[in-house]
Length: 119
Image 1: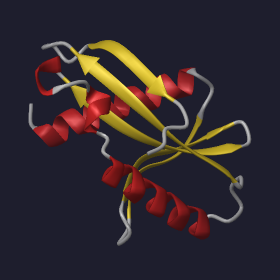
Image 2: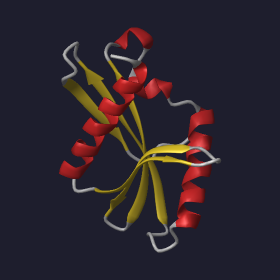
Image 3: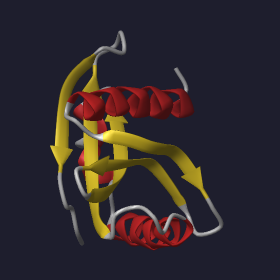
């Protein structure tokens, strides 16, 4: 499986996980000149921008360790731009991360949902 395929698999798994948690998925793989967002969802009256990280093993560190301060700044900037484009969505914003560890057969072993991450 290629890196892009792993990312797509992780985003699919994360979207299903979030739906089961009561989130409404609004957008996936939003791309703009400002940046990209993996998943945009609504959690009650909060607009949530979710970064998804997926790993087969801990050999390269935990999935969430791949979210750098630069990446967080990029997500925030892109989230603000997204909100400008979708002004009818809730004003309350949050950035979450969903880290997924999968086995060699691409089955999820563990989900870590970190809410309201910051730098």
